[in-house]
Image 1 (cartoon, rainbow, N blue to C red):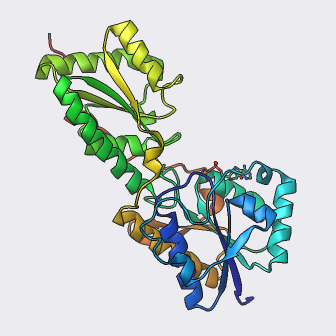
Image 2: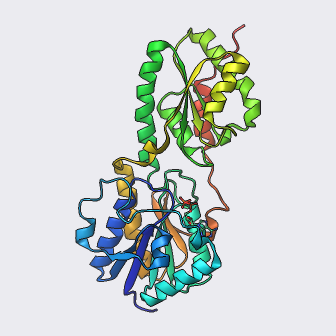
Length: 335
Ligand code: ADP
């Protein structure tokens, strides 16, 4: 096996708190093994343009607690073309890179798969996305912090909702996955959660949303009521859902879109630890000659999953978690 001499690392796609912790762990582990490591800037854009910096202890000091990514992240349309992937392979060969480490989400790993058609070096993924929508790791880096941020925000919303006995619709991120929405709903004691796992078409949900609110008010008296909504769930967006509830059912509710605050902030300890473990694991896997895998943690065990196994087996929310939320807030018809 060829001795590993030079590694490269980049962060791509939606940024996630804890990416810096993963960079730090990878850089320090590489240095420990006397391997050179460079960081491409702005995701695949830096790879195409050979825009990079050398990484060492000095660059990764005091970053474990910082959100965002010191390498910057970005989307890169050019990398989606075969021409772009060929150009990336040229740059990697010119810089004598033996292994490329990609920290990102589902889209970034599609990119890594495409690159592997054009380049023979090792490619190793680290799951960095707040959405937790990748198989191969129970949690992805950034998910715990995003949930924590949303929980803190909704606790504050609950105070004002209580004061005015108001109904709130709070939209959280997650792309096509309901992981954030379901976790946040449970942790904030939200009365209702609308996610992709609700097993109903959005248009069929209006009656059930309204019935639930009506039953809750009848059972408990008028009080605050919070609905957590997964982004992309309601076809025209959460503001439209608030309008529909108002016009069709005369339900007055306040929409609130948490948006990008969920991406920022200092990573919680769970993300720092996960990122550190996976950063170390990626370098160790590289040294062992691993190729074309994502390092994750499944049932407390570091696991390597082939990059092409990730999107096909999208992971699903634990039924128990789903049922727990539903049964706690099962208000029976009040007639
Ligand atoms: P995430 O990694 O957070 O899911 P994106 O879906 O935005 O983020 O993808 C990040 C980048 O990965 C894209 O801007 C593009 O450069 C690359 N990428 C995504 N899909 C593909 C694809 N099918 N082929 C090649 N590159 C891709």
